[in-house]
Image 1 (spheres, helix red, strand yellow):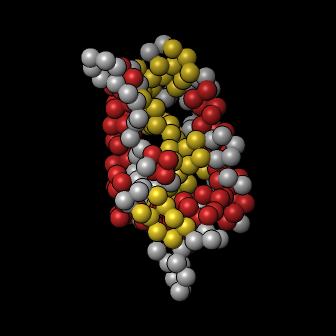
Image 2 (cartoon, rainbow, N blue to C red; image 1 turned 90 degrees about the vertical axis):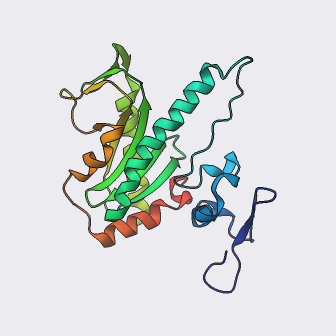
Amino acid sequence: MNDGGEGAVGFYDCNVSRLRLADGYEDRTYEIMEALRPFLGRSVPRSLRDLIPGVAAAPEIEPEAGGPGPDRTRAKRATKDERVVEKRLNRLRKDGWTIVSSIRQRSGADIDYVVIGPPGVFAVTTKHHPSARVWVGEDMVHVDGAEYPDYLRTRRGDAESAARALTDAVGLDVVVIPVLAFVGTASIDADDSSGDVLITDGEGIEQALLDRHAVYSMQERETIHSVARRAEIWLA
């Protein structure tokens, strides 16, 4: 892989599963891995998979003796649920939407997907509560009666942190809308929510985003995406 000129940026050696970078490009690992994504697939080790949007790291959980064990079963289910949301989001690409996966910020924020489209920028986090009944209020989420006070507060904080990072890097006032996507639930009641966090089921996330009004031009979206895909802006 090269930088568009004569100099080589680096290469990925599939035989030893190692990324080799030229001097001066160590801080651009995220961009380089994304560019190499179509050529790598599952040959990438877990330590680097999080850098490649759309490639989920396989859970490395040892099965218990005599069977897969509950932890491994839950991990498989979570991975399957994540693919449900990812599949729905990827359908948006045909309409010019862009997606950056597995955002890790210096602040500790962990966002599953940053989705950029005509209606804005969305920080999407998935939650897995199979067959559960979910109720969402202004500041609290109940799942089968159990309280999850951090669900909304954390989503708001993650979105605010992402908005600051993008605004500083782009030079444009970027508003990031937090999204909480529940996968596999029996029902979701968000009538009493404040509305600042978009609540949806994972299977319906595509339509939930498409139903919103356009606020960004194509040029603005391209500018935001060109910045969002750079790991260093999230770690600043």
